Image (cartoon, rainbow, N blue to C red; front, side):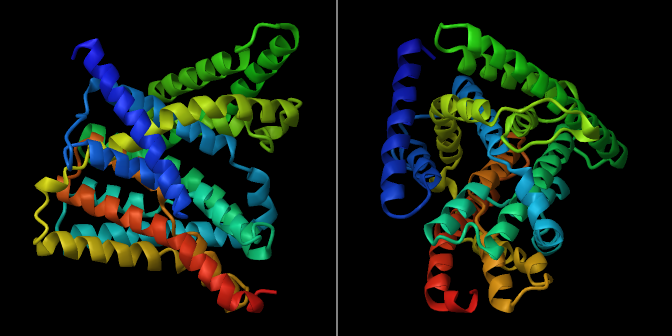
Length: 401
C-alpha cells in the first residue's frame, strides 16, 4: 500500500471513530459502541472504504496494549480488599458460570471446535469495569454497599480474565489444549506478575526523579510508553500475549497498588495522577483504532441472516451472557434487591469482551458467523445494561437503603 492511501484510511478511521463515539455518548451509550459502528460503516459491511492490512493491525495491537495499560492503571486493588469475601464470591461465580455455560453450549449443543468454544466461554467471562463504574456513578451509587462489592468483583474479574486470555492465546498458537503447556504458561505468568511490578515501580521512581529535574516537556509520555512496550515484549518472551505486559505495567503504576512480600517502594499518588493525565491522550488516540478494527473485521454481507444456526447461537449466548453473571451475586449474604443489582452491574462486556473476541478472530479460531454472533452479544449487553440499572434504581432503589 502506498503511503498516501494508508494516510487516507487512517484519517477515515480516526475521524469516523471520533464522530460516532460522540454520537453514541450523546445517546447514553458507551463511546466504544460508536467506534465499533464506525468500523462497520467504513469497512466491508457497508461502504468498503477501508480494509484491514498489516499496518492497521499493528496500530490496533498497540491500541489494545495501551487499552489494557489503562485498565490496569485504573485498577484499584484496595477496592477488592475492602469488598473482601463478597466481591470474591461475585467475581469467581461470575467468571466460572459464563465460562462453563458458554463453553458447554458452544461445544456440545452447537458442535463448535474445542478452542473456539473455549474462546466463546472466555469472552462471556468479561466485565467492563469502565462501563460499570460510569453506570453506578450516574445514579450516585458507586460508594454504596453494592457499588463497592461490584467494583471489587470487577477488579478481580479483570485479573482472572487477563490470565485466561493468556491461556487461550497459548492454545490458539499451538492449536491444541495441552495441560502441560497450560501449567507452564501459568507458571510464567506467576513469575512475570511477581517480577514486573517490582521492576515497574523501581523504573517509575527513576522516571519521577528525572521529571523533577528535566525541564523539556514530554518526558513522562515517552518513558511510560517505552516502559509499556518493554513490558509487552517481556510478556511475549514469557510466552503470554503482549497485552498482558500492558496490563501488568498499568497495575504496577496504579495509585493503590501494593508490592508483594512486603517490598516497600514509596509511591507518590500525585505522580500516578500525572502519569494518568499525560498518558490519557495517547491512549485515546490509539485505542479507537483497535475498536474500529473490530468493526472492520466484520463483514455483515457475508452472514446468512436466515441461518437458524446463527440466530440460535446468538440468542443462546445472550441468555447465558446475562443469566450466568448472576451466579456469584445470588450467593452473597445481602438482601435480594442488592444481590440482583450486583448481578446486573456485572453484565456489560464492553471493551474487555471485544479484546477476547478480537484475539479470537486474529488467531483464526472463529468463523465469520460465530464472530458476528459474539459481537452482537457484546454490543447488546454493553448497550442495554446501563439502561436496565438506571431503571432498576428508579423503581426499586428504595429497597436498597
